[in-house]
Amino acid sequence: MPHSSDPDARVEDLLARVAGGDRDAFTGVYDALSGSVMGLACRIVRDVAQAEEVTQEVMIEVWRTADRYRPERGTAKAWVLTVAHRRAVDRVRSAQAGTEREQRTGVLAPERPFDEVAEIVQDHDEQRRLHRCLTALARQERVPLMLAYYQGLTYIEVAEALSTPEGTVKSRMRAGLRRLRACLEGDA
Image 1 (cartoon, rainbow, N blue to C red):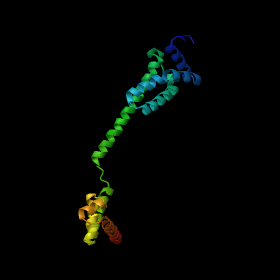
Image 2 (cartoon, helix red, strand yellow):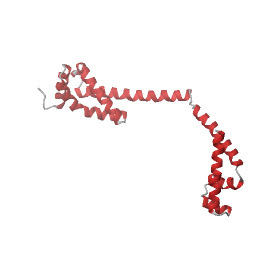
Image 3 (cartoon, helix red, strand yellow):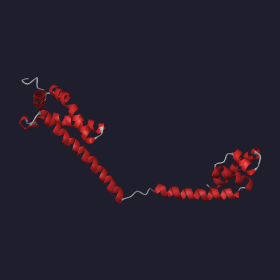
Image 4 (cartoon, rainbow, N blue to C red):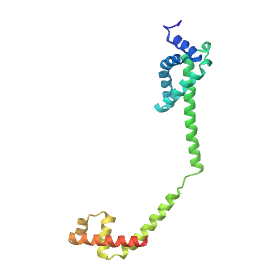
């Protein structure tokens, strides 16, 4: 190698050999330039995974198109980094176009999932059934259940609120829950 002390000249020599299909020379080019390509790609795409993909695509392109390199136009490193810059910018533009396309589609056809409507109807139906079944319960069963479920009271707090023994409240709540379940299951 005539310029073995100059790293740029070494890469140019290697790239010339890559153009002839020399795999070992490509390994040298890869080792010498893949870090610079990765750094440039990271700065442009701002995502390490995307930058890794860009780096691989660029290095494959270098392998396939090494014969297009013209030393009179610049160094081998500058040529490879130009390829990397173009590829990274293309990746960013593609991602932006995809995002804009998704946004336009969302604006033109706003999603109104059928499930949301069905869920609202089902909730209203369940609330009507629950209300009907609750009103069918005896007052002594209904009131403790409503205090527990709608006001978040424990059975001990319900007993205090109703001035009723805890055991009695617990029994009434259990009986009320059984009747409530039977009523709701009977409607289903």
